[in-house]
Amino acid sequence: AIRPYETLSIEISRGCIFKCKFCQFPLIGRKKGTNIRREEDIRTELLQNYEQFGTTKYYFSDDTFNESLDKVQMIHRISKSLPFELEYVAYLRIDLLASNPEMITLLPESGLRSAFFGIESFQAQGSKAIGKGWNGQYAKDFLLKLKEKWKDKTNWWMGMIVGLPGWNKEQEELDLHMQLNYKQAVEIAEEQAINVLLDGNKYDLIKKRFLANSVSDKF
Image 1 (cartoon, rainbow, N blue to C red):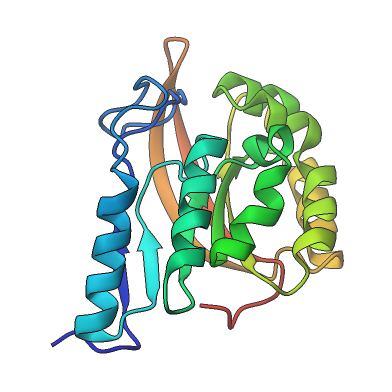
Image 2: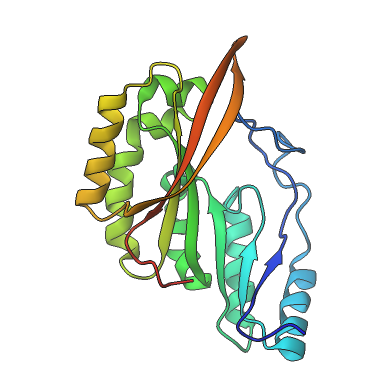
């Protein structure tokens, strides 16, 4: 039987509107606003799970949960209409938080307790090579601002890729120390080998995941 303390998985939308060059997931590059469930169906499922199992915690399995402001606003509406406090974890794009600052407030208000950011690289050449050029230019400074906004409302994880074009080991170490100094990265939680084809060249890379923002007991 499902226990009230368990975290259940739920899919709000399927596929991803982006096409990062290293990504091998299916249904990438889909049209924005498609493959998203109806608001009333999502609310009904959350309510039924609460009534039957006492469930209040979820893992949103969307490839990019914050793909649009409309979608984030929808979950915020649903959350505020429920007779319990919704809590969830989700994959987010950090550049979309920057371009849609309203999300920064809506996400924790709607129940976000832990986020995963696929930063991949703080270095300009590598981030640009995989289609995430914004991260290489602005992500470090933005994370500091986000920490001030979210404080202890939520924690986050960061995914980093070692060995991208132009990768510099010394710079990566400096970036990591900066994160440690600001208590935004506290440990390497996982390492995974990946193979990526970029502009016809094969790269053997390492994907690292860091638990960040030092609030490790949120979820």
